[in-house]
Image 1 (cartoon, helix red, strand yellow):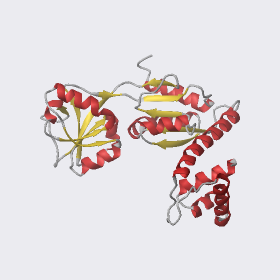
Image 2 (cartoon, one colour):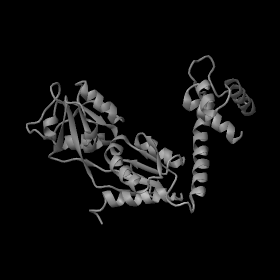
Image 3 (cartoon, one colour):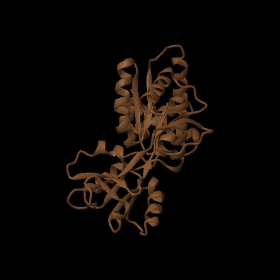
Image 4 (spheres, one colour):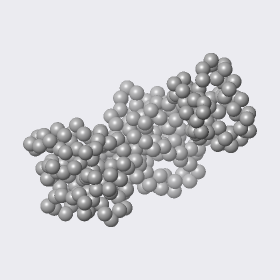
Length: 296
C-alpha cells in the first residue's frame, strides 16, 4: 500500500462518497474506484460495505482508517517540521480545541497573533477532550486545548487559572435560585439537571455532602447539546463560565454556582517528543503572556 492509496482512502471516508473524493483529489471517479478495488485486492479484505449510498466501512476499513489517519498525520507533520526549520514564523498552525475554551480564548489570542505575524495561517479542529488528545497523538495537530488531565510523560503542558462553573437555565420554563446572578447548590435539589460527564462525579459528590441526591435527567459529553436541551426547557445545565459566549438566546440566563463554588481548568498541551514549528512556539509564548501573566 502506497501513500497515494492512503490519501485516496482517507479522502473517500472523509467526503462520504467516491464522487466528492474524486473531485477533492482531482481524479476521475472511475479511476478512483479502480484504485480502491486494487487496494482491497492487495490487502485481501473488503474495506467498504456495498449497496449503501453513503460510504460505510467494514471492520477492516475502520481499522485501516484509524491507522491511515495516524500515518498521514505523522507524514504531514514531519514534512511541515522539516520545511519550517529556518523559515521563521510562517506557515500554518494546526490547533485543536474543545468548544467552550476555544470560544473564550482563541478569538483574542489568534487576533493578536495575526496582527503580529500576518503571514501565519491556522487550521482548527474542534472536539471533546479525548478527541483532541487523539489528534495530538496522531500528529494531526500541534497544540491541543482540553479540560482532560494529560500524562506528563507523553505531553508537555501548562494549566490556565481555574474557571468557575455556572448553571444555565431557561428564563420561564426551568429556573431557580433566590438571587439574580447566583444559585446555591442546595437550591438545585429536586431540579432537573443536565450534567457533563466530566463533572458528574464532582457534582454528585458535592450534592451528597449537602444531603441530597441530584435529579439528573441527562449526562452528556457535548456542551452544545446541553445548551440545546436547556433551550427546550428539559433541565438546567452545569457549564463552565466560558459557555456564556455561546448563550445568545434571551430565553437563557446563567447563574454562578456558589456554596460551594465549583470550578474547572483548561490545559494547553503538545507532544513531549515533537519538535514544534517556530510559529507554534511563538503562539505558545503569546498564550502564556496573555493568560498566565498573573502567575508569573
